[in-house]
Amino acid sequence: MVYREAVSLQSNDKIVTFHNVTEAVREIVQRSGIRNGLVNVYSHHTTCCVITQEAAFDMSMTGLETLQQDFVDAFEPIMPAQRREGMYLHPGPKALAFAAEHDEDARGCHNTDAHLRSALVGRSETIALIDGAMDLGEFGFIYFIDFDTTRARRRTAQVTVIGE
Image 1 (cartoon, rainbow, N blue to C red):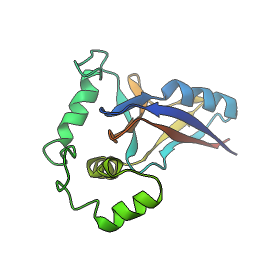
Image 2 (image 1 turned 180 degrees about the horizontal axis):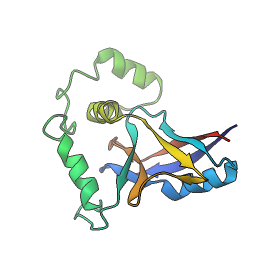
Image 3 (image 1 turned 120 degrees about the horizontal axis):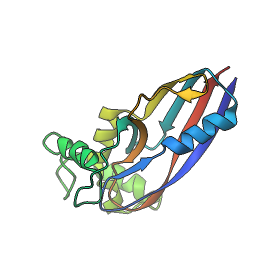
Image 4 (image 1 turned 90 degrees about the vertical axis):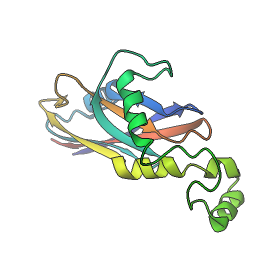
């Protein structure tokens, strides 16, 4: 059996957005009626990713949990946030023209760091479903992360439950 639902999310601008989607995914699993199999949480957005991680509970001054802030900070030495034109080869003139044809402004195109981070981390997680419960371990949570800080926008996490 296969069951699918989408979770709608609102990301912020100016800071990487972490969405804890664990409870929403649990509710989808329950509605599916599937007891044993796999749960896949996926983003088709190329600047977003999905991870499993524990909650840190303590907050940083940015409003992110401390572990989340550490996660974001770990990328800075290898993929710094795009603060100005020319930091990366992307976007080039053809990409900017394509974006303009699709009502995207130039600032919104300067999100190369978000694309690289998402590609490195991955855009999905698959979790074992055992006797109706996701096998996340004692401290596991599912996070949908939007690395794109060029503007606030609606995002969608796709959840597919496969099994019996």
